[in-house]
Structure formats: structure tokens, C-alpha cells
Length: 129
Image 1 (tube, rainbow, N blue to C red):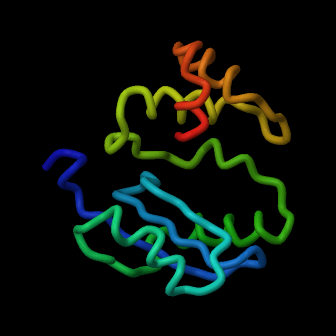
Image 2 (image 1 turned 90 degrees about the horizontal axis):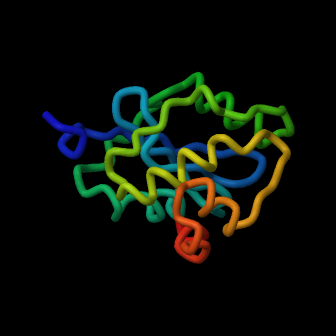
């Protein structure tokens, strides 16, 4: 079974910044969305992107608790959380890897992010990622 066939699991939960949905496979995060006004909205945001079923569960309880703590103000850079980039294009994967190198509290521009990912003329595309 390759990455594209690996069944995914989904957790949907509330935080102080709204509802969060997180999709993962194994221990890798595939998709995360936050700030939704309702559970239904959070599910709708992640559901259509992954047609293999909702698999609603407490997929990764320790990660859920970390996200809740972060939403309440706890500092966490989440760099240790595995991310499954197998569903991304090569360009999107490079952008995601470059993003993960930005230190907590720092900012960058889409131009610098594109440059760090090896595509200096792709600032707009980097922003879309």
C-alpha cells in the first residue's frame, strides 16, 4: 500500500480559537485547518479533499492536546510533529519543508520562502501553498 492508498483518520475538536480538523495517516499529519465556527464547518473544510471516508476519531490525542494548549497561548513550534508530504507536488513539499525551518516567532516573505525552496521566481505560488 503506497502513501496515496494509506487510509486516513480525522479528528475534529474545539479550541479557544474555534473548531479544528486534522487529517493524518499513521503518525503523519496530512492536512490541518482551524478557526472554524462549528464542527460541521471544520468537517466540511477537510472532508472533500479526502474521499476515503471521515474516519472520525481521536486520531492523535497528544497532538490534539498540544494544539488545544497552543490555541490557549502555550508556546510550541510543532517541528517534531511528522508531516506526510506524499500527497503534495514536489514544489509544495519543498515549500512545506522551507516553512518548517522558520523559527518560532519569526516571519518571512513569500519571496524569501520561494528562494529557500529553490524557486526564486515563484513567490505567488509559494503563497498559495
